[in-house]
Length: 357
Ligand code: MRU
Image (cartoon, rainbow, N blue to C red; front, side):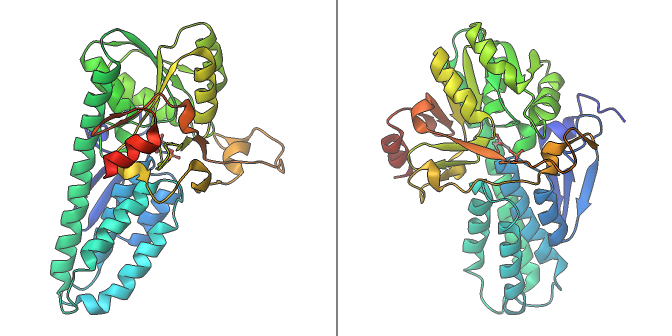
């Protein structure tokens, strides 16, 4: 089945939740198929994050919070918190093991843990599950509002002229509760009539750009062209890019930012060609415990993601492969960090600290 590009359900959010049941759109199949999967067990929610059914830092965080609500709903509603809490701790640990780089995952788990720390031993699970799901729903709703604020702030900062923008990976509605971070800025610019064209890196090996970002842009009639990742530097050399905007999975206290592999080489090329390079991310993506990007854990994924394309080997079957999912862009190469509270400029170590104070 070919997805209708105006599939409003998919565009609003990649997830839906009601009464202990989580639904995720299977992002591995987009854009050729819009299949919604239903989850009623924590383990399958954890596997959905690991296997990229759901991906993108804020979306992973929201899914983890909903996963804890799903697990609480699976318990006997007449039992009490003291009998369930060891299982809750295991559930948090299981979700924390899914993907290491996106700090939004740990932000969401910490929020639910903080809530749970206030539960009395005799609290009925009926009440526990309501409290956890209320928080998960609030996190999801909050992320959508945050994305819209990021979009507004970014567009106000860079707007005023028609722009040729380049983006990498998918930091759109599908990667968040809806609307997107980097794609939120692009959406807001488009709403102001200030997008000439968006160049979309296809983003090997998962092709989040070609499959997901292009899908989102097409659905809203935002002009775009998909390019091979290796074409980006040439576009800059030809003076065809005014600005780059990407998302982030984790930003250290000094402004170093981890994002999809290939982001760092874009930033190096942008600096060489004098192109503005922006990172768009919510406050939940900052990790103030880490002084610099060298401390960010970078996920390495299975070699078959490189070896195989559409189920066929593109390399010798036994080819040795290195498959880091992310890289870290040093703060020195970033022109500005677009957040829901405004656009941070250099020196980032000072502007970030004052934002969190
Ligand atoms: O491996 P993924 O698809 O989860 O990686 C996603 C990215 O790198 C995004 O740019 C990032 O999570 C920001 S999403 C708003």
